[in-house]
Image 1 (spheres, rainbow, N blue to C red):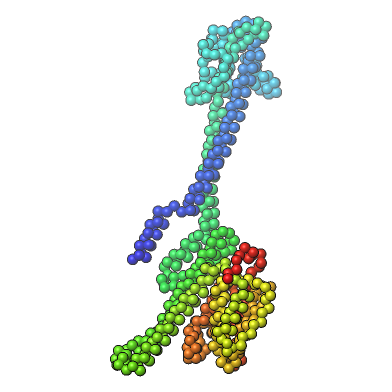
Image 2: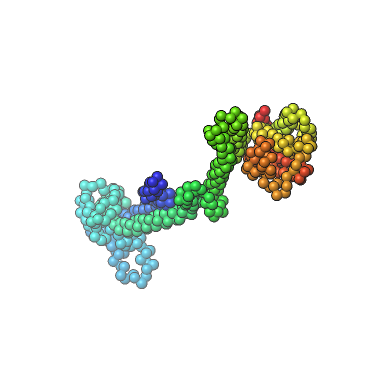
Length: 513
């Protein structure tokens, strides 16, 4: 029920969500559109100003040419004088079509022949005496007669320049000039330029959106694969949900942060898989090993319940056997807990540093004291402090397990050799006994949980078959190695290799005592 509810919630969330790909593509398109809009606005204003200045220059040229021609008169401007000065050149256009060079050599013709330029000449009363073409704006004598402005006429922008005409000889105003420039070309150019920028802007925004979506889909592919992997895990059997389910290796070929994330996710799944397997193995091993002592205790209790409680001898024997099995269960549970902790040492004790020479000497002296009937020999090639990356108590526990096994299985020749040395990368510890040895078919199994070469004899010596498993897990947790060499009736040698710690890495690290 809970699983179905989670699925429904996930589907609802997926339906309403705004994906990163979509956010990325929209954000990219908006960003490109904003940048392009700013650039296009600046460019549009620059071109508009440039074209407007050009149109103003055409109108100013017309004013200057007309003023230059008309200022030669001494009297008030009339239709006759204006025509004489301005229209003579225009009237000869049809006759001069075959001689274009003569046409364009005349500044009056060039100026006044522009299609949007209109020149109006007015007398001192403001009456029009001459017009080069139909004028869109009327002249008013009450207006300022020396202005330049923009006006609207029939929906068209018109540039209007008004100037007085001053006689060169009398320096008196003899009339007025009004030049109008219909800005149709200017407006058309602005409209076309705006349309071009708009089309290019929309095209750039759409292209950037599609490119951004495609790029985000490619970049976020590892995230999709991780999501798919999580979905597969959620749909798998709950007893072992992550078995053989990993993010595909294709993400690791990209060599970027997301590929690193995929690798970390796979490493996390590997670690979780190990924890699940350890938990399952722990439950199976405990249930298997506890079954026998529980059955023994149950048998004795049933025996006492039927008739043994009235027999002092049977009562004492059953209580003694039950207590022995209880102690063995207590020892078993403690060793199983030690084994479970040993498989997590890298997480909890990854930064611990200890002096291996000091610990070896301590364990050696302790066994000399508690086992006076044994001969212990130490070969110490370490002349000074030798730090290794391991928690002190764990190394001591491993040495005690190996030394205790050497003592247990050395019945005929009670002698144990302990040696410690180092090379450039490792500290090497060897523990040799001269006991019964281990056969070739059993030597690869001695580190398995609850494995005993001779189960009857091992149980009689008080072992549960977990000591070597604990020792191996502890050493491997610190990136070391525990191995064994053995010959039947000759004895065994257990070897420990632990990586050393460089001096510069432990200058500020206090060795654990």
